[in-house]
Image (cartoon, rainbow, N blue to C red; front, side, top):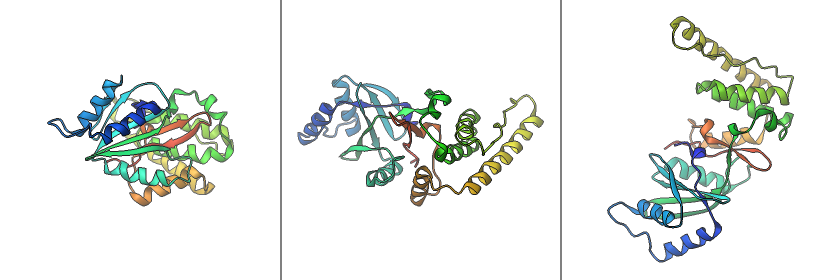
Length: 246
């Protein structure tokens, strides 16, 4: 599921109450499992389910933390271990982590989707040294067949560092002309190579790229897409939310 799209917000009082509920064995197993009882507990406190995924369910209220309720999400467990060691601003801040039987409950800082913010406004919160971060994201979004997001990141990178002069992202021609579609994918491959070469030329040691390398030490194949990149306000820092699927 796209973790950024479904935020379960929780009040501090709810965290305290949740701890007490665990102590009182309020989530004992039934035919629906512990995860069902936990979700019901939040419903009883006014939360509404806004999304369901293979590994996680999410509900929504109104405050400053988010909660992820997951069952068997080994990749996210590994990422949480890395994030909780801290040291990199591009990891999410884990406020608390609880476990009820096989269900993991994570209380996490509230973050915001980057694409809700106009690029011009976003640029105001970053400098030239951040350009490689946006260039790397453009490279990955193009590879994930998301030209709109890639275009957004290229615009930000070029504005922050005019020396880059990265060309516009190839535009998909639609599927009516097979020859044009084939040429489009050829252009995308060449465009990826251009971005990769530019990243190699820059040789940046940006904290975001360091975070990516730390994630790849856990698993080389990552799942970093538009759904897993969010913003921490008020600094507008980019945060990688859930880069290890499954």
